[in-house]
Length: 353
Image (tube, rainbow, N blue to C red; front, side):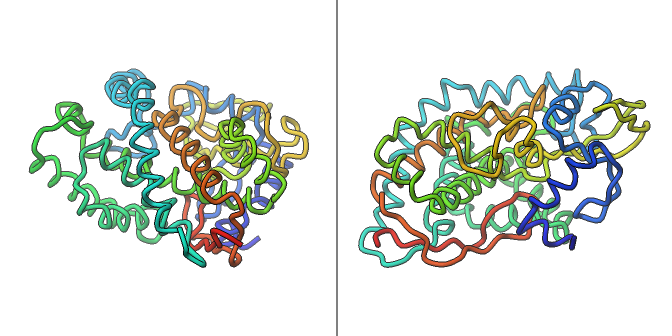
């Protein structure tokens, strides 16, 4: 299989990886790594104390191990508490409706440009305290950060931007002000800004595409919106943004799925492959509500700190779309991005047939 095809069609890779079980492979970015892809193995790997997240220096939350990880995660988790996220619902609903006002009377629109991107970037910037005029810059930096060829340079520019923001920003009722005195602030603001919108953009885009390819499911959700939270979970399982998953390094010999992974080995843990494991999900490639829990947000101590916000944004996004445009249909075959966060670059729809 051609490495670049992973970005547009990762599912044959997932099937091959699961058939092999834990094995040393060349990953789509050209690196040699032990691939963990079966559901039970992924859960075991994400909970294993000898598979370290500290694969790069710098103090970023998702690349830290205990006890430092717990010390840093606590204030960030408090800033993203369930109560605080739930309190954002009215504002997120307002943003969603404002964005979809522009769809009224339009013959054709791009979902990513006009809805899936501006909704979560507006929410995360308001939550963190990022100026509205900086949002285009953040989008460009985030996009470059997720492409292997531009990742290193983009990270340096992103960190420089955040440093300037923290140094010049007036205190306010926002997360940056709340976390201002925490260690490794710049690194973790880069993480929060990027992860805080990029993954939700693709949750909305990937999920809506799956829904539009299943007209019966679309009509069912439009008629019975109480099922939308379950649908969001299924969209995350079926085609979640973190298809490749996460990286680890073995700090000792580690046994996963009956296979010994040698000390110092690089390990890739594929959330996307686990979420389509036929040993856990019947007909895993089919959109079907009411499934068992998934690992789209990870598992264990590194479970996504922003999962509640992403779910709320997803619920509101799909609920508002289906309420206002229940007959929404595809206008053209969408185009996938070449990025480690799986998602669409172009996604055109007709709001009304």
